[in-house]
Image 1 (cartoon, rainbow, N blue to C red):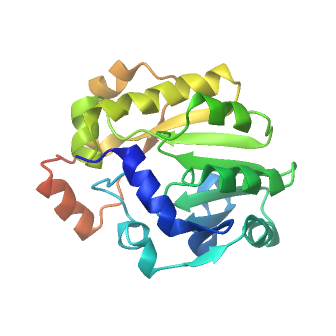
Image 2: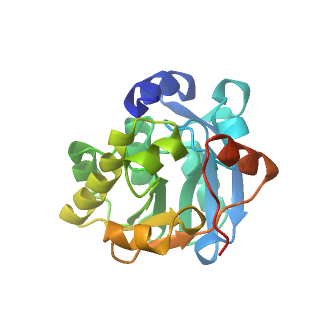
Length: 222
């Protein structure tokens, strides 16, 4: 089983170098009503349904290194009021993320899409100074067992995600949790007791179906 913190340390050596970080794509997307998106490489989980796993899990083979200035400039040039980091896990290389957020103009909303596991209290406190930050935590399970099957990581780290939501609330950072509705029953989701939970639907690629089946994860049609 994966320890997400140990994997994060190993991956950071591949995706962060001399103040730069690896990205593989910059694009305009329709999410959130339209936003500028930078897709980063590297992740500290191995989710069965990851749509970007070919690139994200193999950062040595893809992408290029960009400074925070270069990324913020590329995002700004797309002329959206919303910008986001997607693809891999953006909280890898915390110093880099902190600098990048600081470069985003205050009239733009920076959407941080994350699994939340690396967001400890010290880092959440640091991020709370950015008033144009919105954090979207993608929950990877409803309990230890489901988290373990989906992510390949030890089940106990499920609670890091829940603790992160508490920290975001404590430090008054705008946020919301999201979950894939296809993988859990209504009662399982309700038992989480998380308000304003956002529902996502599975991107049903053939390789995703294969991965889910291999891990014994049932897909529910909605």
